[in-house]
Length: 98
Image 1 (tube, rainbow, N blue to C red):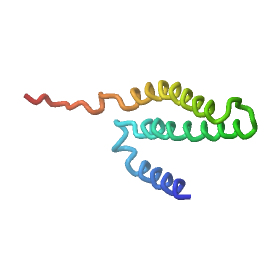
Image 2: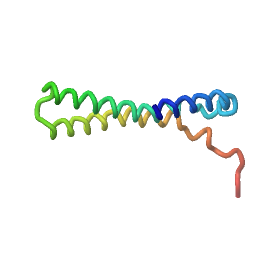
Image 3: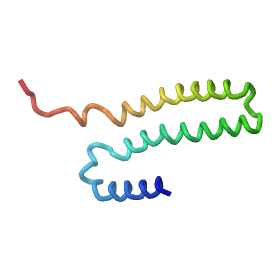
Image 4: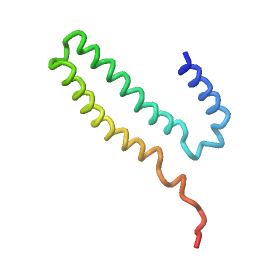
């Protein structure tokens, strides 16, 4: 409930500041950060279900190794998405300091 409540207020905040923050692409940044949490959580749930129903052989050790391997693969993709959404162009200063 608290997570849903927090997301609701985050959406309200986005609606109010959408025009001011448009050059910084806040929605893309939010989606990239939440994708890390979303994929890791649901991947863990699916692997736990696979262990429970014996879909994944090898027991807990293999399941932990599988989750670690999948997170490594996902992080390569998410790192690329981070580079696109958190590019340096929005944060470069327009003034040269000597």
